[in-house]
Length: 189
Image (cartoon, rainbow, N blue to C red; front, side, top):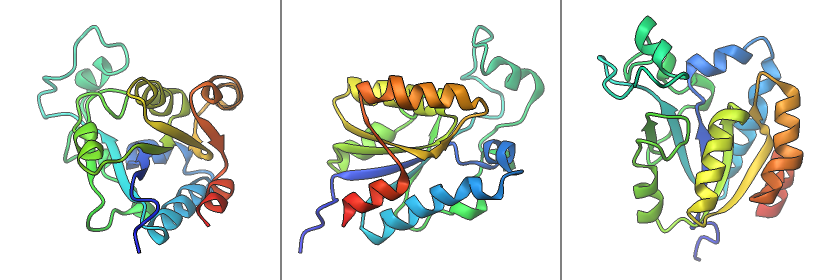
């Protein structure tokens, strides 16, 4: 029997120690991510982890980049740094690639598009930290690349709840389906 979800991928983006630690005071924060990951695995949906990390000497960081230039100044966030490793509660299994990006979007400076095109994936399910960062940037770029997109509203976190709400309710629906993890799981059955 052919896998009806063969052209779909769940992207778990920036679920690395350095970002997850910002939300560690809320033990329940990671539950939707874990549920989505479990559902993807149960339904043979390709899981792809995306993280941001840099080389030791930060050759990919411009001093003009407001977001990343402070990293180069103060250090950390290198490829082998603990902060850039996928959080223990969401460990990749064999066959689940870890893509390293160099900017906010999951596509920027990474081989994500090579992987998803090689696997003939045309539908992306987005989840991760931060809604106003990696989710927004990746959604915009994925839409421009003509992917079908869903955003898991409760498997996205942002330090600013109002920004998260506005993006989920007013911005993202223009280019993606926005639904909860439970609603997405119901579509898989």
